[in-house]
Length: 117
Image (cartoon, rainbow, N blue to C red; front, side):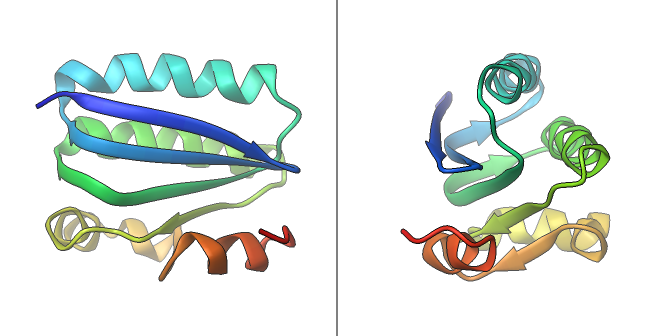
C-alpha cells in the first residue's frame, strides 16, 4: 500500500492527513509536497492526523522531525493527533513526544491552536 496525503488549510493551520504506509520510498515525496504546502499557504501551525497511517519507519520520523523544526523556527506549533497504535509505538521509542505534542483528535488540536472547526 502506498501513502495518500491530504493537505487542508483552516485559517492559519495546515492540516496534514496521512493514510497508508510512510516508508523510505514515500518519505521524500511527502517531504517535498509538505514543504511546498508550507511555502504556498499563509499558515503557521501544523496538525498531523495519523489516524489512518498504518506503518511508518525511521525515514518517516525524519520527515516529521524536519517539518517540526521548520514550524518551530517560524515561531509556530506542530501537533500530532489521532495516532494509530502501530505508529505510536515508533514515536514512543524515538522520544518524539518529548518535543512534539500529542492530542486525542483533530477537533481538540484545532481548538488548542485557536481555530473554530
